[in-house]
Amino acid sequence: MTQILVSEVGPRDGLQSIKAVMPLEAKKAWIAAEAAAGVREIEVGSFVPPSLLPQMADTAELVRFARGIEGLNVVALVPNAKGAQRAVDAGVHAMSIPLSMSETHSIRNVRKDHPAMLAEIAEAAQIARAAGVHFAVGLATAFGCTIEGAVAEDAVVRLAVAAAEAGAQEFSLSDTTGYADPAQVRRLVRKVRAAVGADMLTTLHLHNTRGLGLANALAGLEEGITTLDASLGGLGGCPAAPGASGNLVTEDLVLMLNAMGLDTGIDLERLLKVRQILVDALPGEPLYGFTPDAGPMLDYNERIAR
Amino acid sequence: MTQILVSEVGPRDGLQSIKAVMPLEAKKAWIAAEAAAGVREIEVGSFVPPSLLPQMADTAELVRFARGIEGLNVVALVPNAKGAQRAVDAGVHAMSIPLSMSETHSIRNVRKDHPAMLAEIAEAAQIARAAGVHFAVGLATAFGCTIEGAVAEDAVVRLAVAAAEAGAQEFSLSDTTGYADPAQVRRLVRKVRAAVGADMLTTLHLHNTRGLGLANALAGLEEGITTLDASLGGLGGCPAAPGASGNLVTEDLVLMLNAMGLDTGIDLERLLKVRQILVDALPGEPLYGFTPDAGPMLDYNERIAR
Image 1 (cartoon, helix red, strand yellow):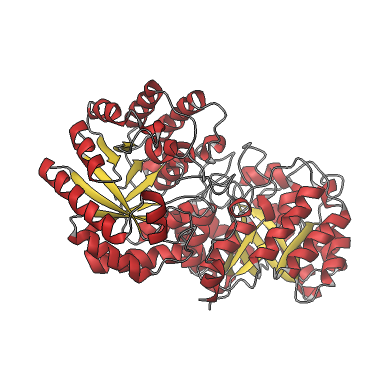
Image 2 (cartoon, rainbow over the protein chains, first blue to last red; image 1 turned 90 degrees about the horizontal axis):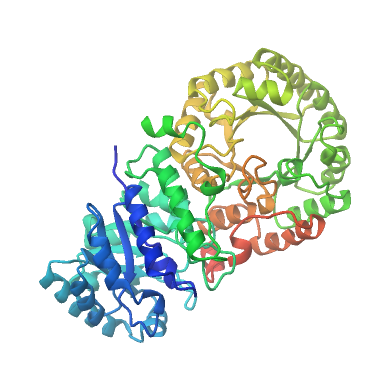
């Protein structure tokens, strides 16, 4: 059975996109409960300045907590070399740094153009390498940008090559803006892999902004993608699009993968119970997903045993 | 460019699943506006006894109205031979009759076991053939049943063969219960086609109950499916699953197909405006879909021109 890694990014991507700050104890309960349901990788937070994102102020403490959970791969996002050092100090297994394919987006988001960001990546890569920490680069806005519109596929390839030279050990293709369509996913996965090697691109970071998230994930799986980022309850939404979900909804993704006979190692029924932690800790925050309402199919256990 | 037919089934499947009765004039406005947006096929209603489904009492009038719209293929659902005669009398281009793969579901739904329903299909097929009306059989609950659970794939194949012998000119595979997963879609499309011929199965009728609708549609497209049923606003929901969407959401489906460079002939921006008719005519009724909130991508027109 093909193993697929569902990487939970809700504690980072979900929580950084909402105004409410989740109490540390609730974050810990969330992380522990997902790990107990079989989730093997969690991005627990990001090492951005707390003045910018108070939601992420406790990331170091969460890393230490999550490191105590056996078998869990603990990831944090870092925006720069300084954040990389903080991530190393906290004890992450892996870090991920975003490189926005849209230079306009990069400048607005981290105030760095492409050359400046590639220099930052090189510095962060050195810090990670010296500490034996896995170092991934997220190719952000790879499928299009809310400011620039279309992003040239050749530019994505060129920047991936440059980031590999700067020290990236792995990439994820990120549909930051919810722009991807399945045909584009296939094309771009193939192009980037042809340039940097298939083993350097095994992860997709998709959003469900326009409801195409799982279809895009399927296109990725069919291209040999083996890691999919997702967020419990699709937490985070899309600030630019009221009513639109955030990341892939972990619950619906796990239902799909398990039903297809892929091995996620995740117990869906236990996972569905974790949602209550979000409901309790984030009152009034919209959550997404269909499986939490509809439940697994009647023959679900029959399917996953197949 | 590959042509894909998006068949709007909201006036039938959507409206029959909700309590409210949409006024005839609103239904006409909906049908006319969708056709004007480029939708080429609409299932306008069903010829069931009005005592059972008052929402469908005006189907004959809608058929006559829709027949006046140039280039529109006018379809109605019929539950039996009597309904087939009413459909012919009203002037449909095509009719569709459901045959539930789950015998328990068939008995509860239309009070007929499989032999009785196949006899009814044979009679309806004769009526359609005599009138030169296209006659399709919907293989309902083909992916699983809320009562029986798993439905054996061999049973689906066997019943499709029996329905072909009874006079079916075409099939749709129907995920009545929102149970399908993409791997199952591929498998079942292949098996049924191997038994009855590829040209006899070009349509999928999918629900989005667990959020897998578009992923299942994608799997179907990759198997050569060329017609996809969908409902504007995902109207209808799922009575058994509060919060769960009904059919594939037409808006999201059209966004996906157009963005992939497939030819639906549908102008998404015009289609999105049609939703207001549902909002006005069905106050308080939940509508689904992400594209109506998020809008097309910034580079959408660039994509579809590609």
